[in-house]
Image 1 (tube, rainbow, N blue to C red):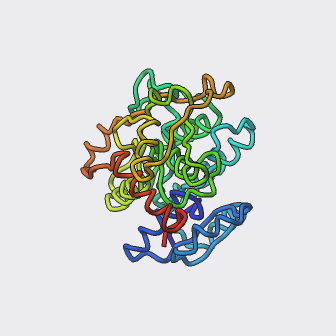
Image 2 (cartoon, helix red, strand yellow; image 1 turned 90 degrees about the horizontal axis):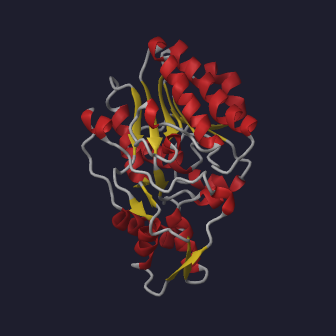
Image 3 (cartoon, rainbow, N blue to C red; image 1 turned 30 degrees about the vertical axis):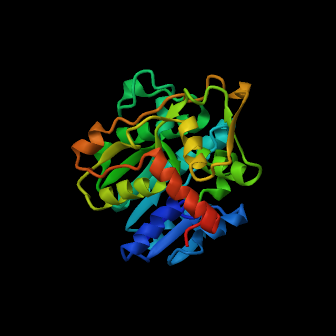
Length: 311
């Protein structure tokens, strides 16, 4: 059985779709459907069963787990409840890892580029580059550290992927945490104006299409000897304004306006990210990544045709 935690979510559902394309259907989705609208992300997936994330760990031994893609987490970077964040993202992940070590189960998990903080020391997979700025980032950072401490106990493949700014289909449920491209498209459809924070032409992030994220996951699935934490970004830094301009190429009537930068985000906001892909390339990943122009155009087409869902 292949387990995908967060399988009803954004990256998890896209990953399952590709696993289906490769002939894998013996998949158990583990997630939280408190937001029932997330069921739409599963409508076009082939999977064996669904179980709530709170019911999974107490019964994990009965599922015959062979590998786990651990994509589930609280991804709200503005969540201030540290206890909730650590229980959901850190403690749950530790229990999964302990199971995988004891049962020799392969595990691929979602880390985050947010562990690099302001990035002033670079974006390499190295402790001197890491300094989280919010609780979400800290929860991911702490699990990466726990993984490092337990590497000597590994009995099967373990790979962590530090996702940079991912965008693409199936992120409708994410609300304010959805991508710039998603919000820009919906602003155009609901009034024709795209609102960006003041200074967005200077805010440059590593935007990566979810299709490329899935390809990187599958690369590690196909290379079971590779172990460790890797960056998962495009290796390019492009501005928020560039994302809005990419939407505007499809909707020429759209206007771009600026709004004040929120005071509550001051000091907690990454104004620049760019994945260092040296380690990923060194270990054999040679695929090209979509740039914002191509990736956003591809995404807008799906948004306009199916509301942003896989068909």
